[in-house]
Each structure stands twice: as C-alpha cells, then as structure tokens.
Length: 287
Image 1: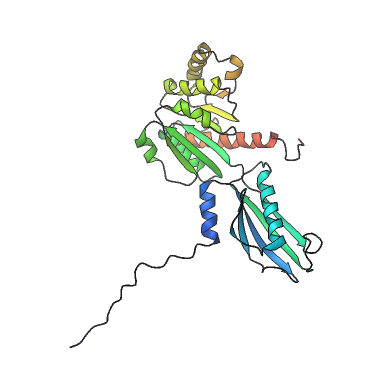
Image 2: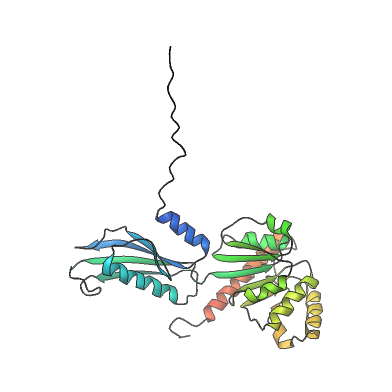
C-alpha cells in the first residue's frame, strides 16, 4: 500500500514578536503622549550599542532600553521633561550628546548621542458637532493632517458613514449640548448640525459655561448669524461674547459644493491654528 505524505497540523502560525514599531504604533493610535528615544551613536565604553531604542510616557519606561543604569535613568528623566513642557506643535525633537563620566557620573569614559522625539504632544484638537455631508467632507480634508478629530452627532447612520481612523473619535449622543463640558480647552470647535435649531442649544451651553475656544465656528449664512445672535441674546448671551463666534465660516473661495466648502473651512482652520500658536507664550514665558 502506498501512503502519501502525512500532514501534521502545526496549529495557528506563531505571532510575530511584539517589537518597538508595533508598540510605537499602538501608542500613537491611543493618543497618549510619549517620547521615542534612540541611541544613535556611541564612542568608547558604553552600556549599549547604537540603534537601541525605548519608549517613555509620563509614567515612565514602557518599552525597550538604551542600556540601563544611569544612562537610561537620565534619558527617561529627559524624555519625561520634554512631555511636561508645553509645545506649539504636535511634536518636538532633541539630539543630545553626553560624556558618560562628566554628564552622567559614570566611571567609564565613553560618549553617547541620543535622539528624543515626542508624539501626541499637545495635538491639534478639532471638534465637529454634526456628521452631515459638509462635516464629512471637512473630516476627509483634515484626517491627513496632524490633528485629532472628534465628531458628535445623534444619528448613528451618519456617524457610521465616516471613515474608521485612529485620529477620529465618533461620539453618538442624543444630547449633544451635554458634550460641551468635556471638550478640551484648546479645541477648535465647529457647529455643523442640521440647522440653527440644533446648533443653538450647543452654542447656548458653550456661552453659559463661558468656554473660550481658540476657534468657534458655525456653518451658515450672514442671515443665519443674525437669527442666532437674536436668539442667543434673548437667552442671556452678551454681544461681546458673540463676537467670538464665526459665522459664516471658511475662506472666501470656491463654490457651495460640500467638497469646496470643506477645503475653504480646512484652510481657515489651519490659518487660525497658526495664528493661535504664534501668539501663545513660549515655554520660557517669553513672548
């Protein structure tokens, strides 16, 4: 009798090692601020080889090593200090050179160069109330940029049409105005709901809580602005407070097609973000 080859069931394939790149990608998608540290060059006697890497959050070391001991402790301290400082952008980087005897207090006389880079550090926060055609087009324009977007809407089917993306958070809520309290203070806020009747409760709550965002915009015409101003003033909002509200929004370019409105709105948001960052005080308290 001829017997063919015997197939042995080896079970499911072994997963690939969970390395530096995978952990970095997880942290980047989570939104948690962290610092990547790479040992880029060594001279003489050092505790690790060039190319060693580690990841550090505000809580401490989460992955990898650049050699342990005093070098690693000093590097973790430096990484955490970078995360503790405010920044005008979403990331900062730094290249340092340490003499192990003079700068670190070790007996060996080697030298290390370390490259530090922060991620998710003071990211640009954008919040959209509404998930309709124009809001979706704005989101598609913004997702390639370094920002984190939150979209809030009571309609599950409209939120479901938005892309799945690690920098996009979808919030389903029947009481959208109740979400105002949780908005970050540095959020750029857009009201793009179904109309002024659904925009107004959100705006009322923003002004009632005296929230002052870097950008507060409402999609609509000059006529819509007049209606909103009249109704909000009747609700107790002062004229001075209403001056912070942008309506209409977007740069004066293009047509009324959702895609072209989205480009004009995204361009204005970038313009306002840059102006806001330039007037923020520096970490040293200057300017």
